[in-house]
Image (cartoon, rainbow, N blue to C red; front, side, top):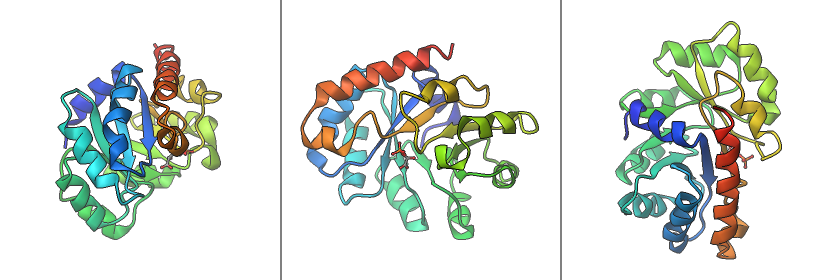
Length: 214
Ligand code: 3PG
């Protein structure tokens, strides 16, 4: 896994993390190239397809600076498999006691999922300073995170779930949002159609929204 400093350096350049659900290992290399061409510096590959671990491996072995994280980590087995595949960071949709125990055995960039103030406070006490806010739109959206910044200004979040080009700027404007994640940049249909140029265009547009964060 990467250090939080390396992760922060990457998302400072481009605070948008595409959430990738990849059906075919053949997509891994052209997908990574398309996203990098669009200016992105990190990806989250969800462990929701049989191809996911090999995709992480292939992207990680490519000669570039892309940070390749694993998402949809929900069990100890997922943690072990994702790390074995060379994941640079881990993202979870939420936490169970068993998952927390498995995560506590590892250093590096781990973004546990939260959707309430109490969960955020518990994860912070356990040492997690950056968390995934999921599912962002369904859990109160940008206004929820804005409300948290008052009493809990020391915590940072990467919201995902329902984020689109329409609401991305609302999240990125918040002081406690270090990056946003979303699947719109590279959808399963884009990949199946081999529409790498469309992915590059969407990545570029997302980077532009991120740049306005200042
Ligand atoms: C996920 O893990 O599914 C992400 O949160 C992506 O959500 P989205 O498809 O709404 O962008």
